[in-house]
Amino acid sequence: MNFPYAEQVFKIHRKVEFLKSGERREEVVYGISSLSPERADAAQLLAYNRGHWEIENRVHYVRDVTFDEDRSQVRVGNGPRVMASLRNLGMGIFRLRGFRYVPDAIRYFTMRHEELFQLLGV
Image (cartoon, one colour):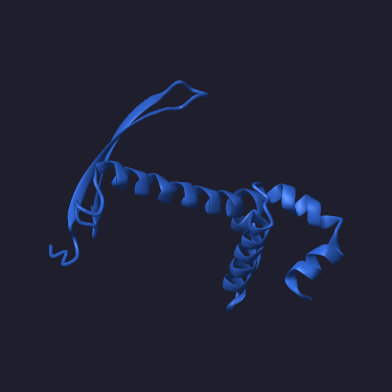
């Protein structure tokens, strides 16, 4: 295979323990980076990998659990894309307002419609 922009290949060996069951698992994953070793050493590549999963987990957890997106009945035309965009907009606004947890923001604005409309400029 040809990877024209690949500068580094890296391997991450993970040891995972599930707290509830006590089950342990090991896995090895590989990655490819366009960053040269001078721009990103092993510690930086690991930090980037962890940062990716932090973002991934924050966004998808909220969409899956808080917004219950998987059970949405909106399935026709651009509806699903519009709803996903509105959910993302909501998450962004809540985080910019300083809310760490989206459910707290939802509860807060449920009783403060005027403040939410002001925030949206409506």
